[in-house]
Image (cartoon, rainbow, N blue to C red; front, side):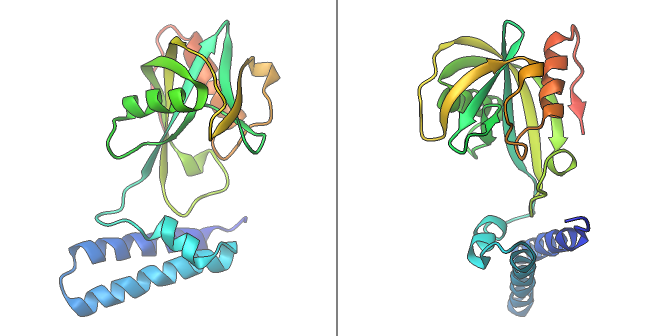
Length: 205
C-alpha cells in the first residue's frame, strides 16, 4: 500500500496503550487503554484482511514499554559463496530468526544456524543493525531490528528439519529466489561486502 500512514498511526496507538496499561493505576484509565489497544488491532485487521484474533496475538500480547523485536541473520561463507537455506515455501534466506528471551544475540545466531543449517559456527562480527521497515517489505505492525552477523564454520552438516528443506552456497550473481521479507539482494550484497572488507565498520541503520 502506497500510503501506510494508517499503519504508523495504529502502531503508535498500540504503543501508547501498552505503556498506559503497564504504568496506569486507575481502573477506568486502564479500561480506556485496553479499548485503544483493541481499536489499533481492529485497524490493522480491517486494512490488511488479517483475522482480528491473529492480529491481537501478534500485536497485543506484550506488557511493559514497547520495544522492537530482534531478528538475527547469519552470513556464512565458503569459497567466496554465501550460505542460504531453503524454506518449505521454496524461498531462500540467510539462517536466522527471532531472538529468544533467554539467549543473547550471539547465542541466538549460533542456535538458529544449527537448527536451520545443521552447522556449528562462531559468531565473529556484527555486520549491521537495521530497522527492518527501511529495507524489507511488507511493513509489519511492530518494529523489528535485524542484526546481521558474520560467522565462521566449525563443523556440522545439513539435515532437513521442521523449518528448512535444503541448504546451499551461492555466489552474488547466482542468488535463488529470496524470501525478501527476511533478506533482500541488497542485504546479501552487504554481507559480501563485509566478508571481503579488511576492516568492516558495523552499519547502524
